[in-house]
Every structure is written in C-alpha cells, then in structure tokens.
Image (tube, rainbow over all chains, first blue to last red; front, side):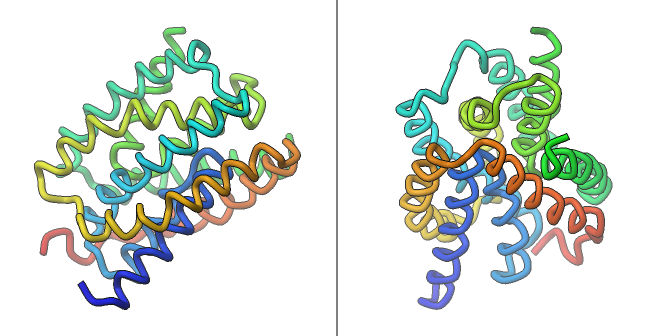
Length: 121
Length: 122
C-alpha cells in the first residue's frame, strides 16, 4: 500500500473515531462513504471493513463511558442479546443482500429521527 | 424486554451490514425508550461490541475485510476515539443531541439518494 493511501486511511479512521466516541454511534456513517468515494473500495468491502474498524473504537469508548458512569449493563442487556443475534444473521446473509432499498429505508428513518433530535422534539 | 430484544435484532442486522444500525438504535433509545443521550450512547457502544464479532467472522471468512485499511484506520482512530469520548462526557446533553440530529439529517439525505453499486465484485 502506498504512503498516500495509508495517510488517507488514517485520516478516515481518525474522523470515524471522533464521531463514534463523541456520539457513541455513527462512526460507520463516515467510514463507508469515504472508503467508497475517496479510497476506491468496493461497496461490499467498504461495509464489511467498516464493521471491523468500529469494533475496537467501541471497546475503548465504552471503557471511558464506563469510567464516567455512563454505562449500565443491565439496562442495555436485552439490546445486546438482540444485537448479537442480528449480527450473526447479518454475516450469513450479507453477500446476498441488495443494499439500495435497505439504505433508502434507513435514510428515511434516520431523517425522521434526525429532525426530532435536532429540534429536541 | 422482548421488544428490546427484537429492536436489537433488527438494528443488529443493519449494524452487521455496516449500514448504521447503531444510529437507529440510538434514536430508538433516546426518542422512544427515554434514555438520556449519554446513557443511550453507552448502551449503544456495548451493543456494538455484542453485535459485531459474529458478523465479522463471516466477513473475514468471505474475504471482505481489507486488512491494510483496517490497520491504518484503527491506528489513527483509537486516539481520536479516546479524546472524543472524554469530550462527550463534558458536553451539554441537549447540545450533544442536537449535533447528533444534524449529522443524521445530513446522512439521511445522502442515504435516500443511494444508487445501485457500479461493481459489487472485483
């Protein structure tokens, strides 16, 4: 890998870490478009690699959130169980998925939630 | 309880794809389940740690993880993750929520305009 590409990947990862640590979510929202548009990864590789990159970010951020008293394992537990099942399923069906409609539905939901969050509704 | 598992399952499928299930879960936790912003962020971080490994086993097996990209991204992203997590703890809750809302608004518009990929296989 060329030095320019290493720097580009480092910038991309650095940005994703910032967003993910600050909001506790959303690192992938930076990674995927930059991987595809700036770094030329295929769409499937971009999505899959973003999951691998975010995992260690979540681990270090969770540790700091825990230190600051913002982690409640029992409260989160049912979501963790569901999330583990969902993660398992997604790995199995990933290669067969058509992402476009999934992303549009996701876009609508995110837009709705974004407006409510922005205006504190 | 059961509803929470189902919500986690649905967003977990998206998270495993790398589509942003975590952001959706955040919205569910703050807007519907009534978690404060930082508690929702904490729960969401734990959730991703539970969700990602199973998906990643398949992604690695299928050769879809770019290992060089992974290495350089993680190297740069760990320090920024730490800095941003510390900053979040010191940030006003409603400001945090508004900024997250603004980010989602931008991403939502972009995702709605998502096109079919030109090439899925190399």
